[in-house]
Length: 389
Image 1 (cartoon, rainbow, N blue to C red):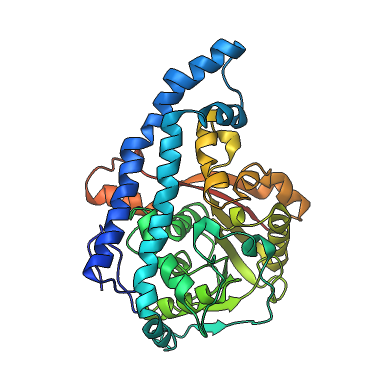
Image 2 (spheres, rainbow, N blue to C red; image 1 turned 30 degrees about the vertical axis):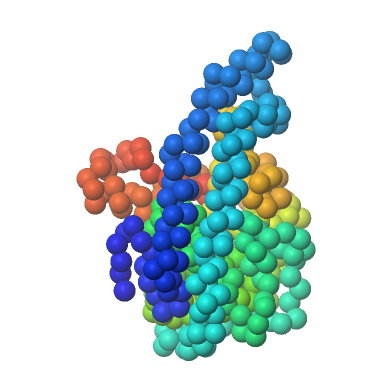
């Protein structure tokens, strides 16, 4: 069932909030929109008109690194207010998303046990060791993280995440939360038109928001999604089946999978790398090299690396490292991915780092006749890193 673009599309296992629960979720979304539109810009003003001049007066130069910006900005009252409110909005978001799931959990579990008829599969591994970088923190402040199970056949983390992502992104990833996958698909089709993947692997797929676009873009392909979290995969499978998308989900660690060598034409991930440790990132890229067929392509969608940003912008992007339970965020944005790829077997001349436009926001602009030619000033961007083999 399609809904307004201002709302999340419904599917077979999306939790149904009551009137009051929905009102609370919409309030949190509006609160986040207010922070982004009205409060966040004040940080730049505080920096330019108060914080930076004081720094220049003391040091006879401007701040040169995000660390120098951090040391002075974190003392500024406007930034402290903004940061506190943003963290509060995260906690409110999870709480508002939990309520309907808690109330409907038994019903949701029963729904996710149906097959749906799309032909996808689900394989879970109860003996899989959950990596410490997942166990140590509740990523994004989601209570219990992605992997914690409190009942048999639990799907709560997936159901909570599905709704929370829409609130977190304020609908800007589209009504299906699919923009990362759709944007990567659009970029691949434009820049690698000859690629006709027969087998596709999405690493760290979560609930499959970004996986389904690949099944839709290449309907003849065999699409696989892997994740370490069983509750996310149970929900992902049921969601894909209800959407009519054929995806084969399995519980695996992207650092070391059970797939055969050279068995995929296309390997992708979407904001996976910054959720893992530096050692894990090396292992993941090495695994991509092992799994890719000759002529295959890997593409990892992420947020921009710090090297391309001004110190203030890097500092603001780094907020998640210290305030949103993202301890590996900072380091993942500093890694030299070209050198890493070479080390793990890829040809350095075939490694790329590009900014890809948001497919959903471009489509929105076209529909509203804002889009003119190839110039789209208002669209979001995804940083894509990858390599050909």
